Image 1 (cartoon, helix red, strand yellow):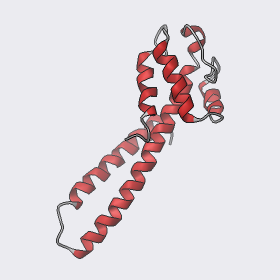
Image 2: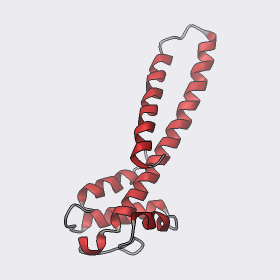
Image 3: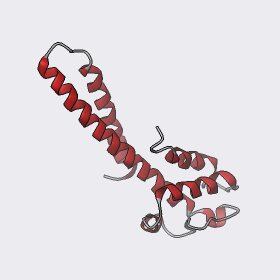
Length: 137
């Protein structure tokens, strides 16, 4: 499963974990319950870590894929950011770059330059900026 379909399913699973965590707080009188809470907390932490990494990777891919529209839709291009080509081609190229650098460059491209039509621009800049928050919270 890829893209937004995976994010939808994973988001539901994330909130299911949140619900179970709330339930886990309600029963503190059973010895076995304490072990279950520890095991659950570990499982939740592992899931959250995987989900956040998946969202980060998705933001990197989506930003890089959108940046390919800079040629003809933006006043400039930036080294290391694709111009033209297919989205799939962009996804294959992005593997050669450090994800943080990709987000820094696409953030600059989306935020600092004028884009025409419904491509790039400030909204995509916000997405790239959100990706730059990965690991800081």
